[in-house]
Image (tube, rainbow, N blue to C red; front, side, top):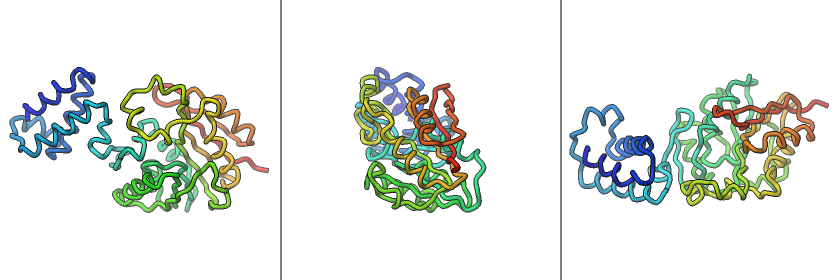
Length: 282
């Protein structure tokens, strides 16, 4: 195993920082050899089979092309659960775990109904279904491939989610039931921000789930807000993950749509990242 660890380190040292390579090595050994990080320390002299060495070589070659390790290994963890990921879905980020956390800290009515808009891998919907006892969780996405992945993730994690295929920008509100909570991490990266993105994101993750036009950065937020005004219960809430540069204009848009108790919240790095808003009463 020491030999393979050295191979990983030497092959990737010009491309990734040392700590990231150490993390890669731990994850690769766990995936390929079934060894926990503790076992990797205790069994450094373990001899790997030819098949294991070939699998490690294949993984390292893909990492050498900047492919995300989550796609290479086919899975990632999110909110304490394991999710399948592939190029049809975005890789769940830690910030989105914070979004789920904000929702779970908000008092919830019995028998709550939740809608996750743009579910992708299903990470938000599945995590909420796992932890909100008695809730009915719906999830919508435009991509059939993403929905198939999300369905497998719901099954993998032992939860029931009602999935719907629809284009949220054109689907009429009448297609949806009433909800107590609507949540979304929609596309919000502006096209002009591509130049500053890492190749492992730009070259591998689905652009449909990432980008919006520079001249209409609130494209999805306006539609989701309109849906929420029509389909949230009187005491319902809307939760959004946002572009850190767009906090003020998202809040302004929600004010214009008569939402109440609008709250702009920072992520752990101190950037504007989440908005919570309550349904208006008339």
